[in-house]
Structure formats: C-alpha cells, structure tokens
Image (cartoon, rainbow, N blue to C red; front, side):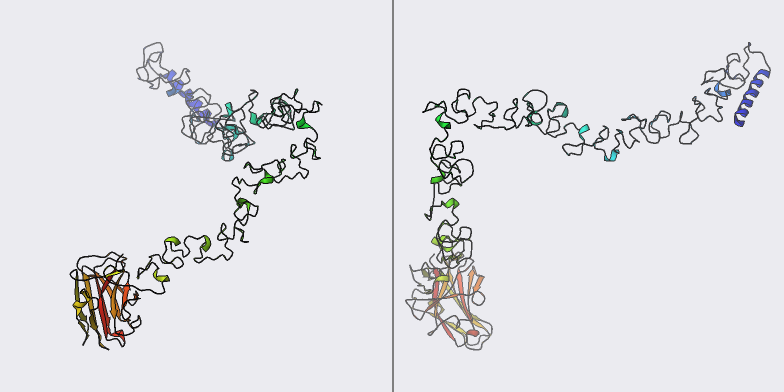
Length: 589
C-alpha cells in the first residue's frame, strides 16, 4: 500500500507540474517538452514522448503514465507493466508475471502454457486435463503411467494386447496380426487372413456362430442349422442335419431305403422298404449291420487291428490295397509283401528280417543271416554284407588283400596277392618278367666309398648293368671301418613314376636275410638329386627269387619319381664282408 501511495503521489506531482508550467495554454501551439508534439495533442505535454505510446489507451502516454496497462497496478510493482494482469500471478517467482512470461521459451506465455517448465510449442493435451502431453506422466488419463502404457495416447486401462506385440489393441491397427487392419477385419481379435464370412453379417466365420449351436462357423458342418452333434455320415463336410443325402449315394434321404448307408442300387430283396444295405445282419454272422465291422463279410470275431471301425477281413489299414487278413504287414504299407526269412511277417514290420535270431536294430547284417556277427574291420556292417571287410576304402572284389588293410595295394612280387596277406612273397627279374632289369645301353653305373673306409672297394661294377644276369659286381666292406661303400645304377632313358616298385638282385654266398642287412640302405635319385631312402626307419622287403635259390631281391616302393637307385653298405654289417649285386630291377607295372 505504501508503494502504491508513493506512485500516486508521483502522478499527482507530475499533473501539477503540467498545470503550473509557464507558456501558453492548451489551446495554443506551445510544445512545453520540446518533443515536436504540440501540448494540445501531446499525451505527455511535460515529458518528451515522440512515439506517443499509450498501451492502455487512456489520456496519459506510457512515458508519464504510472499504470501503462491500466490494470490498476502501478508499473513500479506490476509484474507485467505492459499487459493487464490484475491477478499478478508469477509461478516461477522471477518477478515477471505469468501473463507476460514464457518460462520455458517455447513461444507460449505461461498463462496459456500447458507445460510451463517444459518446451512444448504444440501444446497437445490428449486427455484434456490442462496438463500438456509433454509434461503429463499419463497422457491418455487411463491410470496407467506412459512408461508402462502400451497405448500412450489412447485410454486403455485393461492394457489388452491380443497379438502380444507390445502395442495395445486400443491403438493397434491390426490387433490379431493377420495382415488385415482392425477397421476392415471381420474378426479383429482372431487371426483370419482369409476373412471368410459365410452369412455376410460382418462377423467372420472363425469368430461367428451363425446358428448358435456352440460351434464356430469355420468348424460347423451345418452353419445355418443348429447341429450340436456335428454328425457327417458321408464325410462330405456337410452335416447330416443339413445334408439331403447323408450317405452320398446319389439318392435323397427322403427316398433312400437306407439313408445312412450307401446303397445306390436300393436293393431290397424282402420288399420291406428297408434296403439290404441296412438290414439288421446282412452277412448273417450274428452281428447286426450297425455294429458289424464288416457288414458284408461274415466276421464273428470282429477283429479290428487298427481300431478304425473297419474289421480286418474288410479293411486295408495301411492303404496298400491288401486286406489286413492277407497282409503280412497290416499296419505298414507293404505292397510288395517282401518277406526275406519267409516267416509270414513282412520285412517292413519284421524285427528280424533275415531270421538269424538277432533283431535288425542290433544286427550288423539285417538283411543277410549272420548269426556269428563277424565284423573284421569293426565298422557298422558285418563281414557277410560288408563290401569292404578290411575298411581300406577298396571293395573286396577289387582288393588284393580283402581281409587285411592295404590301401596302396602293394604287391612287390606282382602275383595278385597283396604284400600284407602274401606269406610267400617272391619275384622274378628278367626281360618280359614281373620285374625287368636296367641294362646297357640305357644304363650307367657308378661306385665308390665314403668316410674312413680303409679296405672298402667295389669290384666289377659294370657287370651290374650288362645283359648277363649271372654276372655280378661285388661290394666289399671290412669289419670295424667307419665309412661305407656304394654301387649306383641309373637308367639314362627312363624316369619311373612314384609307386613303381624297384629292387636289387643280391647274394652273399650264404643265408642272406634282413638281420644281416642292417647296414644296407637303398636310396633313389632323380637327375642326380637324392629322393628317399629305404632301410633303417623306412624298411625294405627281401623277396625270394624262385629260379635262383641263393639270390634275393632287396625291394621297396618309392613314393617319389626316380631314375637311379644306389645300394650302400656300412660297417654295421656284422660278419658280412662282401655282397654281390647282379643288377637293378624295376616292376613292369
């Protein structure tokens, strides 16, 4: 009140000042404040006021008006001096009234702003609670906070979500997720992409029960006739209650002498207007037709293996065109009726097809009797039905050792029997034989010693490549020496492929065997470069020579191509001092 009184006093003094100033009166052209506006029209004649602003359109311009907005609140204490604001509300206490303040800077004055402290130029208020969506924790006013609401802008307190997609039914375009929008969906809450509507009532068959019998139209065999039992005698998907021909025999029920039993001929021998097809016991087996599993075939036992209501004597349970009574597998389609063990039970349903007393599931040859279950290679197939008994990836019919693994099919003596299963390995060397010698003029021979081999020598080296296979070169190695002696035979015309067996014909005048030849090594060369060595870690084979009892063939199968073979002896030969070499032999294939 004191502040208002002070303002009023200032106003009165200003008025007095105007009235008491010198100069001409209001009717003259005097401009007391020198603002180029004559006093007669100047709304502040004693205070320069060129713009003549006057917000409240009273007699006083804003420059000399103590209440510019005319709201009866002096400008000095008015929180909105230029906007009429009698209530003087100032929600954020910033001394700027709500009527002229925009606290959140969104272009909407606080007085009209639905969210005064949250920028919200759109001013949406979905639930019309005067609290804008931008600052309302429950935009649709359904009692479910927005953070938990599956339809934030549509009231749905039940939060129903038929298709469980996180979007509530109330705001879902396709609640059941069947690809049909709710507005056009004849069953909006039940997936129904076909949108069938039998009765055209706008409610789809999958959710409609036109006849009110408790059966939905999509499942009802009589949609427009109440039919709780849903009987369909002829299985034509048209229920008996609305089917004019229940037995589908082409004769309407009202004319049919057996309406529930197919009888297109309408035979009625006794003329009682009841067709033979529905006589009490047409086959005379003591079982009435209605209960008879085979009404046209005498069947007092009424056996029904598959429980389908058709007796075995007239039923084909597995649909293979053979009646169960004649079918060796009545429950499994078995048109061929194969019965390997002739036990009356078809192979398809026989647990022991080969009749060897071993169930097929445990039998390693289920289709071939194999009581001993012999299985040499311990695979899943018994020997009786295994095409590869030794499991070396070679069929027995092509395997030179069908019972011993021999993947490389090694057969050094070329007798057709693989080395692993050949107890009497032997070979012959000569022109046109299994092994052929390397002879001049397509052969060269070199010899020498290595290391400290005093007394070592090779004599008559050329004899190892001459045409006389009875001639020989001799390799001599004394006992105790630290070196070795060698004899090398090369084919100057041919390079032999990997896998082509080779051998050297040798003897020592006595019992030559592998233990005596511990210090012997066979090395192959190609263009003078060593390829591989047999002897020691890589063993070689000692073959008999049937035509020469004293000779043996020192042999192995190289894994690399070669054109030369070298025989080298060292001092570890024990008692052996001399080895005779008759020549080098190469397998013919």
